[in-house]
Length: 272
Image (cartoon, rainbow, N blue to C red; front, side, top):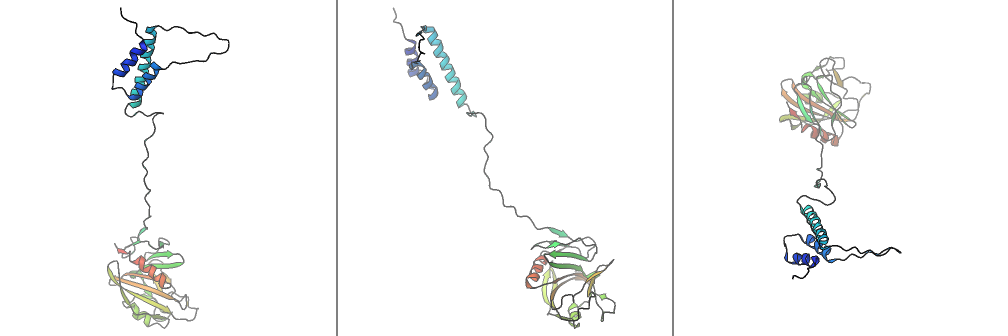
């Protein structure tokens, strides 16, 4: 005759000797279910009811607890499972690159001869796309400058009444021969890989009634510069020949810092 066996004791022994592959959390859940006696407070006036549970029923309930615990453990420990629902991919912090805008590159109109390319550094900009084919009109704050094509340049004749004459081969000699100007000695430079000349010119104070142009540019409707417009001022000419009666001339009125800025701009110039 076999002695009756308590189902709780059977399951507890099975837990102690049974499968070792279960996750520890599952083992704890089953152990708690088999060893804990639940106590419930009854409301006042309600008689105690202690329905007897058969051994079969107790075993079935414990099996259900085991199944739920094992299923929950499988879900929790399954690869890719996250408690609280799926979340978006983790953002990888990255430092935003420091963006430095590139200076604008300007190509002269096709009618400009010789065609040039400039990188507009140091605050320079093209004031307007020139209607005249003989100039690239440049602006930097209050500074007004121009790069002109020698092929369209003319200078004043011997007297204001004389017609304009083509750009002389020796512009320094022309300036030195005019009582209105005092040019410095020419200095060599290189622009766009070609040899050039820098001439700084002081304007001699004179009558302000002279409003005529001293240099004109363009073919269709020539426009010009009145170099006597600012008595006592200084202007700079940068002359870069590219052939007989061809090349470019940059002109700017200003001071040493302004001339340095023009030199920085011309250092980007390329002949196309």
